[in-house]
Image (tube, rainbow, N blue to C red; front, top):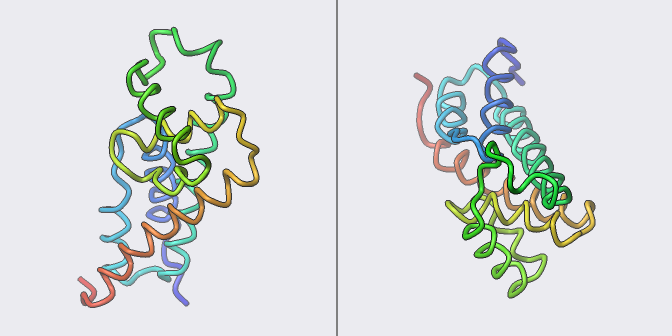
Length: 149
């Protein structure tokens, strides 16, 4: 098992965290690059990316709990239309909509709506971790055939 330098792994955690929040970030490309380099254990990279991304989603969930206090501030990055669309998804599919937090446009608002609708943290964590871990696992599977750079 290789652990390599901690800097790239911490960078992956940060990119995955930011990618789950409302900030624009791309963690899959960094994960693919690090997997291809072969300098780190792929299990370590998957765990770190998943943990960072899930933690970012927890921030969204918490902001959802505080939505009435923060939604009309200028810094709040999600518009009413995106929140309404995510709320419709959540009301239609229930907690199972949390298997889609990786989806573009609606993914981040879904995690916020879960907090807004007071979904308990434990079911939230389980579904979001499953979804996000699966997405990073798919990246790892796609990279499995490539040779180190």
